[in-house]
Amino acid sequence: MTHHLLLPSSFFYVKPNLNLTLRYPSKMYQNIIILLTIILTSLRSCSSSYPFDPRYDPSMSPDVYLETNHLHGHITRNNHMKNRHGYAPTSSPRAFNVKAFGAKANGNDDSQAFKKAWKAACSSTGTVYVVVPKNRAYTLKSVKFSGPCKSSLIVFKIYGKIEAWKDPSAYKERRLWIVFEAVNNLRVEGGGRIDGNGDKWWPKSCKINPNLPCLGAPTAVTFVECNKLMVSNIRLENAQQMHMTFQDCENVKALNLMVTSPGDSPNTDGIHVTGTRNILIQNSIIRTGDDCISIVSGSENVRATGITCGPGHGISIGSLGANNSEAYVSNVVVNKATLIGTTNGVRIKTWQGGHGVAKNIIFQDIIMKNVTNPIIINQDYCDRVESCPQQKSAVQVSNVLYKNIQGTSSRPVAVKFECSKSIPCRGISMQNVKLVDQTQQDVVSTASCSNVKLDTRGHVSPLCT
Image 1 (cartoon, rainbow, N blue to C red):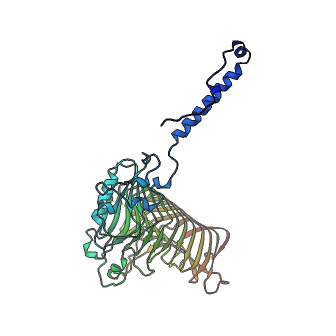
Image 2 (cartoon, rainbow, N blue to C red):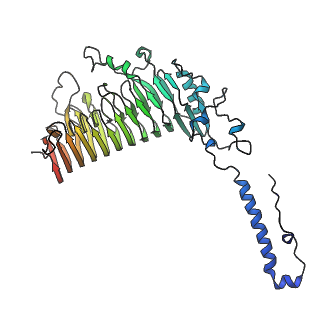
């Protein structure tokens, strides 16, 4: 681009008066400096010829994705989407719209279109987007989005709705629905909904009908062996079984999630963490028929903050040590949580016969409202119709702090420490805890404690006797 500068003639002509130049050299130099300043300013304005425009950032608006190249699936802007120079910045990421790959959103299976869009994105370099358009509902059977990918970042934008295929017999993998596997640098976001249509599965659960075999059902969304993962601003509802699982992942953020299913839906854990390290779960509302958050073996450096839970079974570590297995959980912090009408508050549960350790756990700044078992450690956990056999070995529970916890219990016993006689709970501390009876709030609840070494600080009630 050529820039024409209109300058006074005095900038280009200096009267050749040697005596004046020698006596007043600053006059000439001052003119030259002013000239150079104007030229440099003009060049700078030329180099910044792409002013910010949210249309060039696909994360700003879902509408930018609706117009795509149907041959390749990547974004193509018409002239009205171009800037004043006629083209978009070369750094603009590529977006792959599932509609461009054949997704119809008409009630038929759109799984293949989603797989094609993922394959195109995963094989591309740089930052790429997979886009589920708004105001549409796409139906999927079991689908797996696998890595590793060439892209430096994949953003899976769910603006619309994804719902599960309703016929359980069509699922090749009965325990899985949507799976992201071995993908690094992945973000799943967009404000859309994922609906598992669990009402087609729940009546077939052995917990609803004990006469039926216990076959299990799919987890709605599973992340396996993913690193540098963020899931945010998504609504998950009516999962077939668990809503979201992080399995063997590292460096995870789960933010601003809404997870809902009926309070009587079987085994519908909200967020399940297994074998995962360095995970933050933050500012989420979870209302399900099972644990709002469950943290099981192999997990460490887990932080859950700003959680609203209920209905459900509370926030649980475990169960651990089932079928005489080894379990290890460490460095867990749960804070700024509110539990409403749950069957448990903050719970650690282990099976008899297991071995390993659950240690370095903090529950703090928690409000309980009409919770059945606000604080509970159970080393005699048994999730079976028939009784479990007595065994001597157990998962060691140690270094657990309960701090700044208050609220109401729906039962007289608000604190239960049911620890193993052979391997008792150690290093259990309570600080500034006050739990009262829900029906008579001027009456302090009671505590039931066995085989526990307990330290208290500040005001604590109820106390173990």
